[in-house]
Length: 391
Image 1 (cartoon, rainbow, N blue to C red):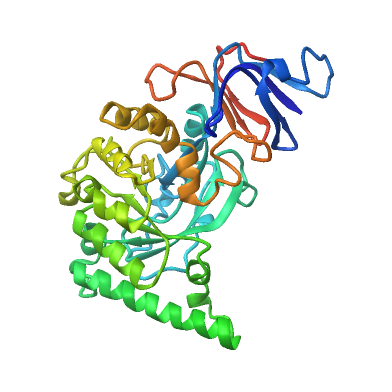
Image 2: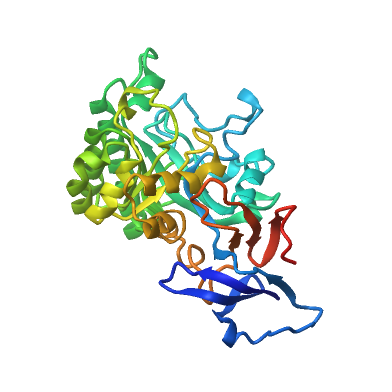
């Protein structure tokens, strides 16, 4: 059992305990409240690990809602880059879990920044890229780190698929082709789904990966930057009555009302990166605040390694600086991210029954000088700052 005492506990469930405690047993939160209610007190029981937060901020582990950590590895060049199967524009059957390397140095950077879980998957070179996975950021065996897999189906619009297949004498060469190819794939997959559901037809590996999408268990994860690409993604998702997240959404502020009306959430970023492509010329940190004020549920992403995973809380802070409320800044990297990724039953807030993923910060994590003093995943301390004196 792990008990954190004397922390300023920000639960992200609309409750803050100025002097609170948190108890974790068998990986799950079993008790939370003010110190006046703490059942532990000053127990010296040897089977209870006690961390004195000493008034520092205690909050849920930070969540990265879209990245390529461990698939595009740092320091390893082509040998460590498994992000895009760029020889075929339609590859829905690819699985992120077969390419994520937990030995990537970015995982350690994530823990040091208080990031305890991440949505990881293929890149955007293909019209359909494959299946994302939501995993914890600590471990050596990916199978033991999985929270949800598959967790989303990657699709991509605009510049990246066009550029990747340009000059290869194959589609797509235009936005029209990207949309048409995606519609054809969804049409064929829906026919397979209907037959399988109604006629008990044999399993076909090529289309079986689409079943959780049509069952509504996982969303399409749409790489979209430009306003017209965002609207095309919305149009196609509506045609097939599918759920979807709008990832990057760089021009979302230009069509905020249309996005609100669609009901789809937005994962914004990487706004810390350069505007090195035509379709990101209007990219800005202000987008998060504009969409949030319009009533869109928003999360913030680094899109690691486009910008570095450890700067995720700083990206949220820059969004706050540009108009997002501070409370929504916290939500954008915790409970909103969890809800958008479909894992809020386990992570994103500190509530009884949820995973014991907790971080102790010496200040607001959205401020550049703040340090993660202690990172905890499922009740196990996985990182402690060398200068922290909490144990």
